[in-house]
Amino acid sequence: MMWKKIKSYFSMLHEYRVMMKGSKFFEKNPVVQGRFEENEDWLEHLEDRVYTLEKMIGDGSSNPSPKNQD
Image 1: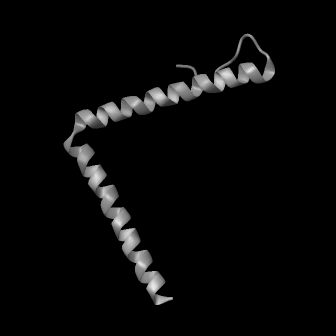
Image 2 (image 1 turned 135 degrees about the horizontal axis):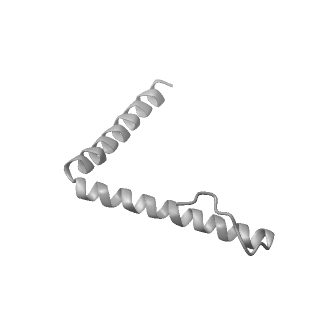
């Protein structure tokens, strides 16, 4: 039982250090962070388009209404 808690603690500590390392990387490289955010926005746009296409296919509509319009 005690071994499980110790193992869990070190696992949590390792995950925290990995997250902090990633955070520091983006803080030191704002250009990379900006590009990453652009990619996130682009993927959200693609998700909206896929949603629209799925709605078109699902209900046979020829004039779909997208979930989020830009």
